Amino acid sequence: MERLSYIDEHARSVDANRDRAWKALLKVVCKDPADPSTVPSGFVLDSAAPPTRLAMKGRHWFAEYALIFELDDEGGNRTRIRAESWGNFPGLHGKLYRALVIGSGGHRIVVRRMLRQIAAAA
Image (cartoon, rainbow, N blue to C red; front, side, top):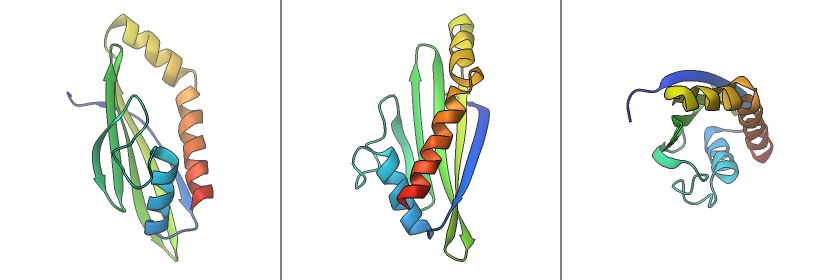
Protein backbone atom coordinates (compact mmCIF):
# COMPACT_ATOMS: atom_id res chain seq x y z
CA MET A 1 0.00 0.00 0.00
CA GLU A 2 1.23 3.48 -0.80
CA ARG A 3 1.17 6.17 1.85
CA LEU A 4 -2.42 6.95 2.73
CA SER A 5 -3.84 10.44 3.16
CA TYR A 6 -5.20 11.55 6.50
CA ILE A 7 -9.00 11.73 6.63
CA ASP A 8 -9.96 12.45 10.24
CA GLU A 9 -9.68 11.54 13.90
CA HIS A 10 -12.40 11.03 16.48
CA ALA A 11 -11.76 10.44 20.18
CA ARG A 12 -13.58 9.65 23.37
CA SER A 13 -12.48 9.34 27.00
CA VAL A 14 -13.73 6.31 28.88
CA ASP A 15 -13.90 5.47 32.57
CA ALA A 16 -11.63 2.45 32.37
CA ASN A 17 -7.95 1.67 32.54
CA ARG A 18 -6.20 0.83 29.28
CA ASP A 19 -6.49 -2.95 29.74
CA ARG A 20 -10.27 -2.75 30.21
CA ALA A 21 -10.59 -0.27 27.34
CA TRP A 22 -8.55 -2.63 25.11
CA LYS A 23 -10.86 -5.54 25.91
CA ALA A 24 -13.90 -3.33 25.18
CA LEU A 25 -12.35 -2.28 21.86
CA LEU A 26 -11.85 -5.90 20.81
CA LYS A 27 -15.36 -6.80 21.98
CA VAL A 28 -16.89 -4.10 19.77
CA VAL A 29 -14.60 -4.28 16.74
CA CYS A 30 -13.61 -7.95 16.41
CA LYS A 31 -15.79 -10.95 15.61
CA ASP A 32 -13.87 -12.90 18.29
CA PRO A 33 -12.73 -10.60 21.11
CA ALA A 34 -10.00 -13.11 22.01
CA ASP A 35 -8.47 -12.78 18.53
CA PRO A 36 -7.57 -9.31 17.18
CA SER A 37 -7.16 -10.75 13.68
CA THR A 38 -10.96 -11.20 13.41
CA VAL A 39 -11.53 -7.61 12.30
CA PRO A 40 -14.67 -6.65 10.34
CA SER A 41 -15.20 -7.61 6.71
CA GLY A 42 -13.40 -5.27 4.36
CA PHE A 43 -10.43 -5.02 6.71
CA VAL A 44 -7.40 -7.12 7.59
CA LEU A 45 -5.34 -6.75 10.73
CA ASP A 46 -2.33 -4.53 10.07
CA SER A 47 -0.97 -4.56 13.63
CA ALA A 48 -2.03 -5.11 17.22
CA ALA A 49 -0.03 -3.89 20.20
CA PRO A 50 -2.14 -4.61 23.28
CA PRO A 51 -3.27 -2.49 25.06
CA THR A 52 -2.25 0.56 23.04
CA ARG A 53 -2.89 0.13 19.30
CA LEU A 54 -5.10 -1.76 16.86
CA ALA A 55 -4.56 -1.00 13.18
CA MET A 56 -6.69 -2.34 10.34
CA LYS A 57 -6.33 -1.78 6.62
CA GLY A 58 -8.23 -2.64 3.50
CA ARG A 59 -8.66 -2.00 -0.17
CA HIS A 60 -11.11 -2.43 -2.98
CA TRP A 61 -11.53 -1.05 -6.49
CA PHE A 62 -12.33 2.49 -5.33
CA ALA A 63 -10.20 2.94 -2.22
CA GLU A 64 -7.27 1.97 -0.03
CA TYR A 65 -7.94 2.71 3.62
CA ALA A 66 -6.88 2.23 7.23
CA LEU A 67 -8.58 2.63 10.59
CA ILE A 68 -6.26 2.89 13.57
CA PHE A 69 -7.30 2.86 17.22
CA GLU A 70 -4.85 4.34 19.74
CA LEU A 71 -5.45 4.04 23.49
CA ASP A 72 -3.82 6.70 25.64
CA ASP A 73 -3.64 6.50 29.42
CA GLU A 74 -5.17 9.67 30.89
CA GLY A 75 -4.44 8.70 34.49
CA GLY A 76 -7.01 8.27 37.21
CA ASN A 77 -8.34 5.05 35.66
CA ARG A 78 -9.32 6.83 32.41
CA THR A 79 -8.35 6.08 28.83
CA ARG A 80 -8.66 8.19 25.71
CA ILE A 81 -9.52 6.12 22.64
CA ARG A 82 -8.67 7.75 19.32
CA ALA A 83 -9.83 6.46 15.93
CA GLU A 84 -7.72 7.74 13.03
CA SER A 85 -8.93 7.25 9.46
CA TRP A 86 -6.64 7.26 6.44
CA GLY A 87 -7.41 6.59 2.80
CA ASN A 88 -6.81 7.16 -0.87
CA PHE A 89 -9.63 7.27 -3.39
CA PRO A 90 -8.10 7.17 -6.89
CA GLY A 91 -9.87 8.04 -10.11
CA LEU A 92 -13.38 9.26 -10.79
CA HIS A 93 -15.02 6.28 -9.06
CA GLY A 94 -12.81 6.86 -6.03
CA LYS A 95 -13.82 10.52 -5.85
CA LEU A 96 -17.50 9.55 -6.03
CA TYR A 97 -17.03 6.85 -3.40
CA ARG A 98 -15.25 9.32 -1.08
CA ALA A 99 -18.12 11.79 -1.51
CA LEU A 100 -20.63 9.08 -0.59
CA VAL A 101 -18.73 7.67 2.39
CA ILE A 102 -16.80 10.63 3.81
CA GLY A 103 -18.56 13.67 2.36
CA SER A 104 -22.02 12.47 3.35
CA GLY A 105 -21.04 12.27 7.02
CA GLY A 106 -21.75 8.53 7.12
CA HIS A 107 -18.17 7.67 8.07
CA ARG A 108 -18.24 10.14 10.98
CA ILE A 109 -21.50 8.69 12.27
CA VAL A 110 -20.20 5.10 12.14
CA VAL A 111 -16.88 5.88 13.85
CA ARG A 112 -18.51 7.90 16.61
CA ARG A 113 -21.05 5.13 17.19
CA MET A 114 -18.20 2.63 17.52
CA LEU A 115 -16.49 4.86 20.10
CA ARG A 116 -19.76 5.13 22.08
CA GLN A 117 -20.13 1.33 22.01
CA ILE A 118 -16.54 0.88 23.19
CA ALA A 119 -17.11 3.34 26.05
CA ALA A 120 -20.30 1.51 27.05
CA ALA A 121 -18.53 -1.88 26.92
CA ALA A 122 -15.65 -0.59 29.06
